[in-house]
Length: 159
Length: 185
Image (cartoon, rainbow over all chains, first blue to last red; front, side, top):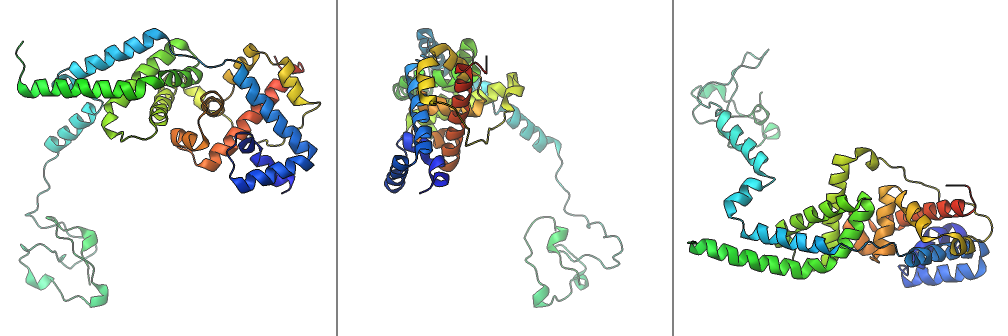
């Protein structure tokens, strides 16, 4: 192992997070490379400084009480109140509005003719009366027809 | 007060869920607060964020099927923190990641660190790191999470955890050495 391989692994080595093979290789490299050994000692010193500096913030005691109270309120609250506080409520309301407001697409009428296409569009709908409009389709050109209420242009093969 | 049977059952199961939740997650309150405090850099904001995170965790408690409860909670705390920061201090999210891996140092940096870095200075330097660097040092060096746990909390690949932690420490070390020799601050 050379310096280029060892340097990216020095932090993991210092943290004891390397697998055995890499750990031994880095260890051997540090014994023979002063620069990488310095880098390792830098990391170890920084880790020690961080550990000794007492940088940990402990939660205030009142926070524990606040959380307990909030949890208690949340569990004793009636379901309908919880529903109205739900963050999904606006999304549900919007979805409901869409369902009500958007009218169903009429399926009984003829689909509008395609521009520059004099032929009527064959459809997969059984209500199509113009039987002659459906021509035999060559097997290679066949595409799956999805049974939907309204035919989609993409599902129709035009010959 | 008259309560329907279903209502009573709901209350009982709610109380049980709350008790179970407290038993599993309240022991990690310090860890949650520590992460939130370092990410928000304000005690009052950290209070709010941790409360919000615990309520979120409680809402999703049914989705917790055992395993590492601390990592599960810290993931929610972290996400809540970033949501809060995006809303309240959007500029903080924009950070630069220092790609320098090989920083030339003079003398014996280990000695420099041990002799000259005091607690207040180290706290200040850590506080000034970009959030992505700060959080990874907090999770590893203050909280003692394994790389795998950090990967789970931050949703980063293990390799990115390794390289980001190395860059974060490199940056902190560089700033500390510069402070100690009077280049900074």
